[in-house]
Image 1: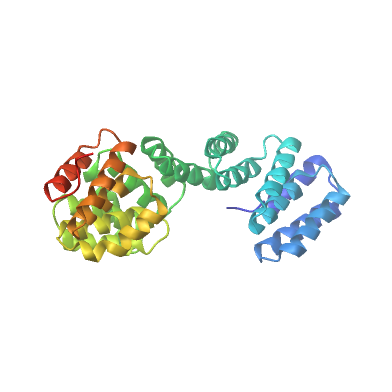
Image 2 (image 1 turned 180 degrees about the horizontal axis):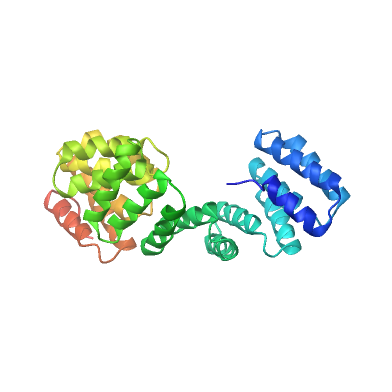
Length: 311
């Protein structure tokens, strides 16, 4: 997330005849906000508004103060006020997208990021956040399109790693691996690149190398869920389901309705000698995804190993 820059405020001042005191208080507030002095920054922004109530930038900056405090409702109010005062305020649209996303209003957030980019296509934060949102929604082709543009305007390893992940998810493993390897030469700890290479190692049956990459990816909260899911899958595939128990428990706590989690937990249950649980979990996976043939295989094996399959 970016702050409203002082140079932008100077430009606005010369164009709109803002009182010098309003500009000064707002600029001082930006510095205090960057330093984490939220109370002082808020006071400065409110002073700026006392000098000029229709000054859009202090409203946008108050939105950032409220966002830092976790007060998403007031953050949204201030950012929308800034936009009402200046409909082409790209940073305000971008930060509104962040607030809306944190509220779980992803469709509205995407609209806000898109509006910011329509005003300034070079606004890297908005493009990065839009790509993040679409990755979460598994809209990988659309995320890839944004990331392809983003890497043209910023030398950002994270964007390259995410791009590798999107390439993999849209069925281009060779390009995904090429990009992941390039990222890892510069940023060995990049979680997306580690995840991509780990997944590719799994597809080639190279479990030891896969675990090395996936365990490193798991340390990052950016891809923890998928990395943990795949580490557990490798451990079960290696015939060591007990090693996956803690991860399976974590996955079930965090995503109990996820079909892949239910399926993997079912194979784990079968591996540790709980066929009835395996059957129940397999049925749960089928309920979420009726076309999941692997769940049908799990249920059949659970029944063959003694699960109660009469009902």
